[in-house]
Length: 149
Image 1 (cartoon, rainbow, N blue to C red):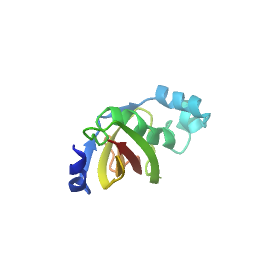
Image 2 (tube, rainbow, N blue to C red):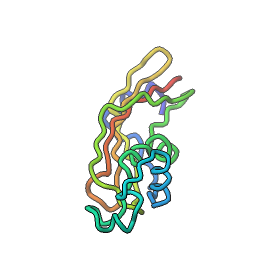
Image 3 (cartoon, rainbow, N blue to C red):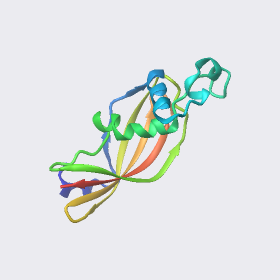
Image 4 (cartoon, rainbow, N blue to C red):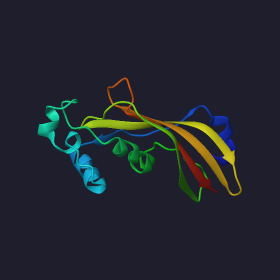
């Protein structure tokens, strides 16, 4: 959409990503990258006896999908004429439901605000990361971006 159209989209859904598979290989790679090798993430045998009955993704793995997978697969606002988009931060994040191994996730993005700056737009987006077949989302996160025009 054009930068001048952003204000008319506040409060509306502006993007919906494709489904992304969260398999054990992805969970293990995230564990290796972060050093978080807690059994509920990386040990299927031990996790089977744990609270979820199966391995689950790290909450921060779920959140990290906003930075790449969802952006690359239709889950973020596309603004015409953008030279670059910079992650400006997060206002609020909640990990609502565990993401069990081999779940599929997608991001539903709703524009919360759009403010004009000097050569940029600052937008706030409410992301709802859905789990296929589940009522409750995996996570919600308000992300703030600076879109340089």
